[in-house]
Image 1: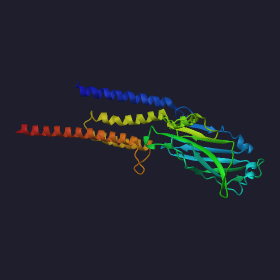
Image 2: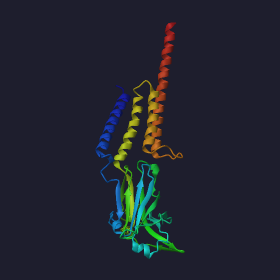
Image 3: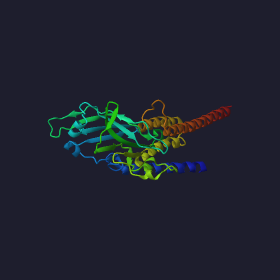
Image 4: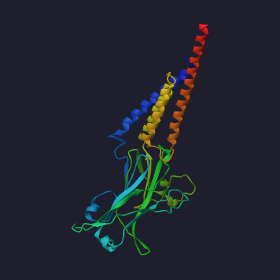
Length: 324
């Protein structure tokens, strides 16, 4: 056996071992259709989630942060205003508003742009004993720090301090809400990790770190690092390794064109399955891996096809010569 065939055989064996190891790892990590353990995709910060405040008519602000496979984040939520707060600030005439003050995400950078969230009109149940008011927050995209093109190694940082307020003329009056809860309900592919101070949240090695950066965040300041699950990265690896099969098969088959078409179709399926169709030609890092696989299989297929055609022509010529 030639050295080239030995290397090819070892590569094929290593590929098969890696494929089966990745498969069993994903199978082990699967729990009721969820990647990883139950609850790994959810977290909260601020006031512990409870329905007690709403039932008793106490002031309660609940923010709900969700995202999808592509790393796009959305914010929604609800609001309960007690009868005392409603009357104190005359919220029947003053429009209640919500702003999200971003936490510092990098040393030397001072956030200046606030996220404004629209609060739907308050509705009151006057027949209830507590006569509190209730409103929904208008769902909207929310800005996070992160590079979506680094898929599947993309990491995002969510850090905000929610503040309810209303405008009285040109004066902005903030409301003091005791119960504020932020719920992180992430996609099955993500896991949120709460950060408790500025050093952990920014996560930069620099000489600009000060002692006050180790100070814990306030009760209403919420910071999370949202990362891809290891089991999802294994799924991505498994799919990429499957695309390597046609590349190896092309060395063993005499019909290289079929393997090229299989790679082309497989790369398109993997791309749509993991990220979705290309939008405005925004390319991810994984797109270049898929492109490299297509070019590699295409190159090898073309070289082998040329070699097969050359041998065929040589056979035809030798046949013509022998006929004379």
